[in-house]
Image (cartoon, rainbow, N blue to C red; front, side, top):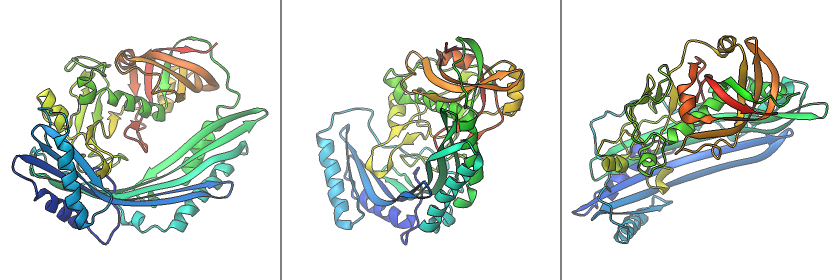
Length: 458
């Protein structure tokens, strides 16, 4: 299942044994699913040369889903004690009796897609001591302060990691496990010049601490903050914009939400009834690929235990598919795309994109800026989720960035609004950069050039 893996004296085989024992108690005419998991999460935050907070949490437990008579019941327990397993199964059965009937309910079934072998677990993270995690957070804060004399404060410098393992066992024949590790450092700083203060952020992600580059994270945060000093509001007009990779990742996350089978079936997607149509520029291809080990959210299986797989969503500008779990696929008369998502053993599965990315182009950001000539680099946005309507496609968000003048970055810009529609933005994509960045989220960033976008400033 899609979760991280934790060091433990018990192995994934122990979790599978628990799942097997629960599923073996399935009655005639009912389907039973057991999701068993164990995880650990650590977060260290440094502030002003000291440790502001250090938290570490461990959890383990089981979630049981029962489907019988077109009704579904679910229950979970935060323990793996034998005497609790029977109680959890009984509670799930009781809950099913009071549920609403739905002919599309049912557990996922094996579909013949082989589970990929992904290198997602690093013992080095499991063995990394707490004092060294603290040291990394403190070192990051020092690096940010030293990056530029105009840095006057570090609001946050943190180290975060996650480790977990889990399994899904069902009476329909699924029996899969998954484990992974992940970590990142992130910082948020202030730059001051005269009476003006600007903010910036930076981060680095990996599977183990040796993957992290504190100097890059610190330099990015300082650069983002200092380059906005002296920013002014731009004049309103229609311009070509270049989305910074971090902004593109946020945009893709919004886009991915409109491509789930659930969104389509609930009338919450602008792409409903548009399969097979041209929805974007011919050079744009969007894929959801949780089998890519570079993706922070990659995993070998989905939330229902089906094999992860590469799902092309838009190919050459043409909408190819929506993503489905077992329920939405059954409702749509199609097959699951291995896109069930769930928040561990405590929840039932939903559906969504898991590791989105655009097919990269040939040029880095400086080359793209040179090709654009005149426009605006959008370095950050605010209010993105509230400013986008997933049904109409209306898009309006606050933004800041830098003017592109003569093919290079010029004066900093602040407090302007970027407005268009998702439909038009996709059609107006001019180029995709080669600078793919995997971020601590479900989408990768890349520089994205979009023509004819309205900006409103003065």
